[in-house]
Image 1: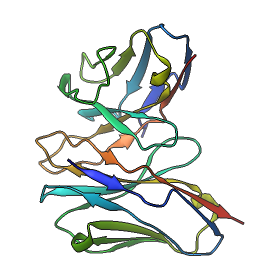
Image 2 (image 1 turned 45 degrees about the vertical axis):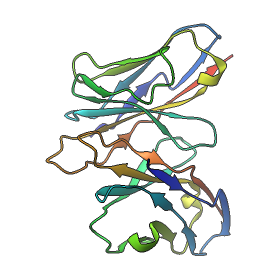
Image 3 (image 1 turned 30 degrees about the vertical axis):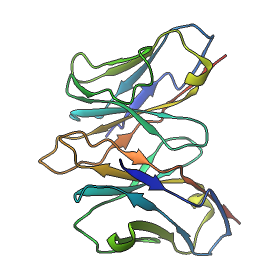
Image 4 (image 1 turned 120 degrees about the vertical axis):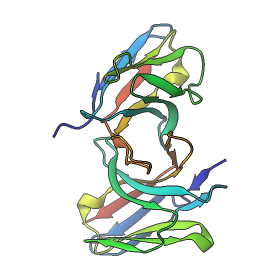
Length: 116
Length: 116
């Protein structure tokens, strides 16, 4: 069975600090996909990034960067120079490519609070 | 273009009432997913449609939960004889046709159900 663990329940930082959100996953499949979603107070899940298991290249998008390491089954997310607008719950999710059903298994989320 | 829409956004039901939650996916998206998100938790998979076919309903918690998508577009999640433990946010997501690789799921704002 697949599982996603986000050990950090809550993180609080001061604006402009860098912050890393941890994600560890478990799966028996060799082909799988990893995601990060952001859930602001409004409640809607906003897609941030998707990676497949064959692509371990790290990715940077503006202030966001992702570190995917298969050796440690981790897919960590770093926000550089955090801003108040980054305050939200962040979810890591895993999908095994099983047939055509790409249902997502989510972690419990990390609540990030960025204080001015 | 328009994103996934859900209605109602909030629903208060008395225990034992039936409720119906609606999801309008992004136009052209063939896959549709329902998730349940309890307070402080990550979303959990309920059911999956590809067009009008319900291919996976393994996540539905009981036979009081029923979902349909008769014309392959709008979907309705129905909960009969609601119980207090059904209180949660119900999220709908859709994804475009796949060419063999996983497509990203885009989420609606959710329906917050409170059962008294």
